[in-house]
Length: 312
Image (cartoon, rainbow, N blue to C red; front, top):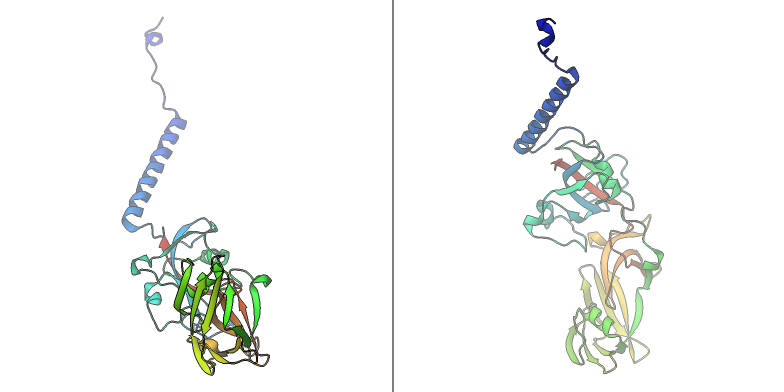
């Protein structure tokens, strides 16, 4: 037998194994490089955003128009200043010259930071998330979301007469008593110097059965202030147990201006019986106004200014 038969042969390199090793090495380099890039540069890619991307944006949300009177071709409210209901920008929230909605609540300055959202997650309005697709960091977009929070349920609308009657002394529930006067308790006893939402002073006695007897200390031929845009004028009634009130709106106030085509009015907050309503229409000719008890943004076209800050 020859020497070659006893000499072990060298194994040849497996080409499949070599390719697999190279691929794994390259993948490792890509992952490490990507991680380092993200750590150093904040992963702030200039690629357009797509479905599933986690992004951060700044925004200003308003209704009746964009908050700064921004104009856009085809916009029926072009040039009108909107009422801001939410924003991520402290510069907008803290600016007293920018109109805010009744429901706008100013937060602490440090809480005004870019909004984090994953496109397609459903954590923001659908139209808002959809608008982010294709945007790049630094880009600003102006959009309108029609009926962003849906239509106002019919059960939450109500029509009020501008002139009505109230009783000097009335019996109401404990819940209505607390809501009307902004109290946290209705413990038995006598309550004096209560400020009624319509501007006059009332007093009350909480009865043993839980009901409350309220007496309104109104002066006839007196006008009381409800808010900056609304007053109540008190006059005598033919019934000595009652008095007449007339709701009067200040038409010179910008937020009370009515669209002659639709009758829509910039929303005014209106409190009655412990419930908060929002006036959506004033019909002087018919002597009535319409309210909704849903949130003021419900049933409204929403205007958003969105700035794509970058990727999370």
